[in-house]
View 1 (cartoon, rainbow, N blue to C red):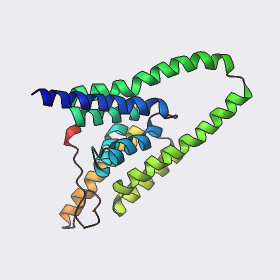
View 2: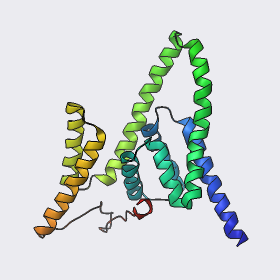
View 3: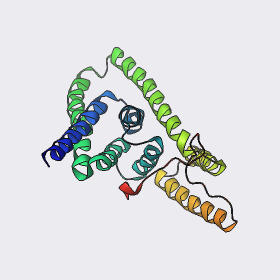
View 4: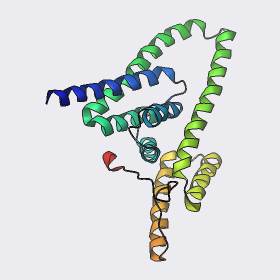
Amino acid sequence: MRNEFKSKLVMLWDLFWIFFKIGPSTFGGGYAMLAIIDREVVEKRKWIDEQEMSDLLSLAGSAPGGVGVNSSAFIGYRMGKIPGAIAAVLGITLPTFLIIYMLSVVYSLVQNEPKMQSAFKGINGAVIGLIAVAAYKMGKVALFDLATIILALGSLLMLLLTGWNPIFMIMMGLALGIIIIYAKQQLGMNVITEKESVNGSAVSGVIEYYI
């Protein structure tokens, strides 16, 4: 019993510390964090696989609130239930809150300095790179057939050309996904809901933890 309790405490500390480091080390907000979260959770610690991470990010992006905080809550709950979610959210928000508070004071004093303006332009460029990496990694597992590719490209074009609310696009994508799967089933076609691994078997994507 004591060893089990100790292991839970270690897990809670790991969740807190990992997201504590991610929060202040990522400029650009939620989507810029995704590449760092993927590296820490999937590549280094292997708590979840790429498919589950893709499912998680889809849920985090469609839920209210920042995608970075939502992702930390989902991962924390996945690893340690409610205490894990609390530890992860505290970890990712606490340092950021303190840093933003201090930066707001400093920025009010030096916001008109040319060097500071140049520095922020450089940060913006790095943020674009981080978001691009996160999109690429998610796309590798989320885009597995012609239908998913068409839906992704269609959503991108609609958002760029119409400026529709992303929530509407998410709901429309959900409805179209259900319709496509139902139509394939009625036509007797093979229905694939996740990308196949190298050996031909489907990569398991477990999302029941978040529902």
